[in-house]
Length: 141
Ligand code: RB5
Image 1 (cartoon, rainbow, N blue to C red):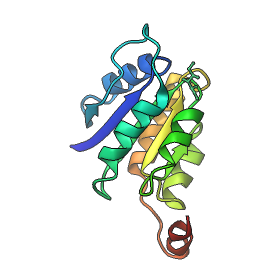
Image 2 (tube, rainbow, N blue to C red):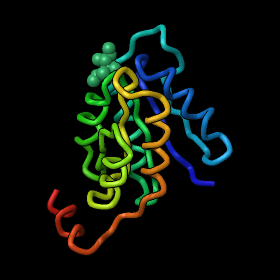
Image 3 (cartoon, rainbow, N blue to C red):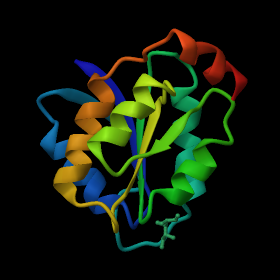
């Protein structure tokens, strides 16, 4: 089973839990917190923690959830080996893999419906980088 790192702030906590439950039979999740929705935390702390893990191997994938998905993607994209994509549709989730070789998907729990988020994750994980003309572009990032 594929291993996936997952993390959220308080705003993303409920969706993070729903994601783990929905995919329990398909993927193994390494949950890096936070562990409740009541205590307000700072999303960059969780993004950085997860990015350090994902950066260790080119086969690693991560899921980051906050209220909008924006803060998590901004923080994650400060890491050299991370290409984090804020996904809100199956189409853009697929493209983030096909063209950009994204290794982290970020989701906005307050803006994206649960079932769309699940579909985005499924598309993200099961789509391979196209390579070819996109290799040099990704390197230029
Ligand atoms: C928390 O209120 C919210 O600001 C955070 O989850 C995220 O949306 C930031 O980008």
